[in-house]
Image (cartoon, rainbow, N blue to C red; front, side):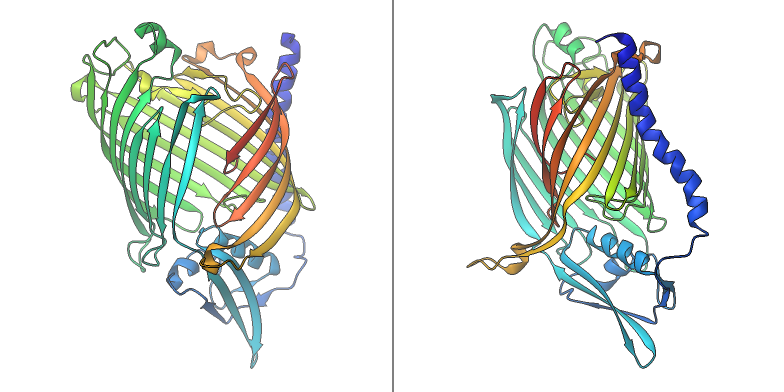
Length: 450
């Protein structure tokens, strides 16, 4: 494809991302003065029903209003979605009743099944012999505090074991949370440079241990401090840059800070709101000569354009800064993050940039599924179902130095698909995407692109 056409496509992708942001900046000032289309109602009391396990304060802390506040129907709809976003309930209903001149808000929830195994399988380069498979054991909300324990067992091509615990609320009267992570990995080198240096494929063995302390500033703002220790072992035949130290084994402490802003309505599949995540890690602190930094930023915007038509935009970047950056911490595209249409094209470097844009329209906006099956509890066979049709475009690139940054190095893809939302179990999507040469591919994945 001619370079001038590439420039036009990349320019159009950036334009599609930033124009709605500019329109929002202009329209938000106007909307503040427009009359709200529904009347305001004063909430005199709030009652929660149906939460046999979940503590009341886990639900109440998600609300953007409190007793004696005046709210609109729009506000109630937004807050219902925020309660759904906890991922703890099959159904959430808000209802206002008048009793002797008082407005009583009842939040009726239907709790989900909290303990279940999730099998998985991943293929590298579409080859069955390069498959990683296993099981993910999940126990949610076991003390009613939105706590999560997760154990992941992976076998095959990239074996490993992960144990994770997280509790967002340590004390009901405090906004402090806590978590820890233990992760053992046996993973293949994913960089072209490593392949050239080693003259072939090789694997690392790695262990990550981390603890984090969370401080919730308010419903939308979260601050997370992270500290940990990491271990990576390269093969006996080691080369510079395969590790960060002079030896075959890297051992070092790490620490970081994560700021998260999230004003989305339904976090699993948002229609309105903003998501921004800025993460900084420092690794090594000079131990064994290791000293480098990682900065990861993720900006997402969600807007209603017309009726139920939703525009979504994303800009994500990750960069590694330092003199001796190990290949196992390089920024990668084509793995967890990829360009649809070129999903199996691999990019590696110290920095990557990924942009995405989607238009989404609901085929089925919300359907309460309730099945009665023998031997299975109803909490396991009930869900909120949504089906969305999407049009999307992705563009991205990876590079070592900003001097190497060039628009013509960007790869892009576009296509269409159907997303199936199954709350509280997340969902899956089926997509058909084209690369720059109009070659197509079918993508089937759990979760959503963003």
